[in-house]
Image (cartoon, rainbow, N blue to C red):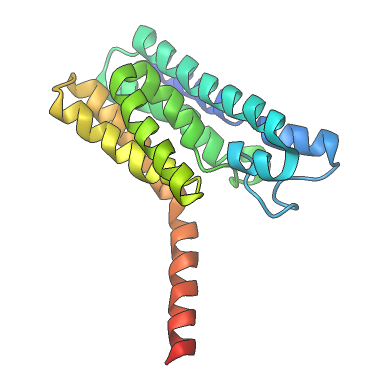
Length: 197
C-alpha cells in the first residue's frame, strides 16, 4: 500500500471520530451521551436530544462516510488501500480515541460509504432496512437488514471486486461493533429463560 492510502485512512479515521451527538450533548446537557446511557449516534441523539438534533447528527455522520469513500476512489490504487480507506470513517466513529474507543455503532457512516460505492443497491437495501425498522420500532434493524442485503446486491449485480470487498469490510466493521450488544441481549434472554424454568 502507498503512503497516501495510509494517510487518507488516517484522515478518514479522524473525521469518523468526530461525533456530533457527543458534541451536542456536552454543549446542551453538559454531559456525555454515555453518561446519559446512550450511544453517540443518530438514534441516541433522537432519544436524548430530539428530532432536529438527530437529523443534524445523522446527516453529518452519513456525509463523513460519503466524503471518505469519495476520497478513496480518488486516492487508493490498491484493493487493500481502497478497503482500508472506506472502512476508516466507520472505525473512527465506532472506536474514537478521545472517548476511549467507545463511540457509536457505525450505521450512518457505513451508509455514507455505501451510497458512494453503489448508490442504487445502497438506497434499495437501506430503504428496506428502514421500512422494517419503522415496522419493528427498532433502529438497528436498518443495519441488520440493510448492510448484508447491500453486499448481496453488489455480488448479484456483479459490481467490481473492490466495491464488493469494501462494502463487505464496512458491513463487518459495523457487525463487530454490535457484538457486545448482541452478547448482552443473549445473556438477558438466557436469564429470562432460567427464570421461567
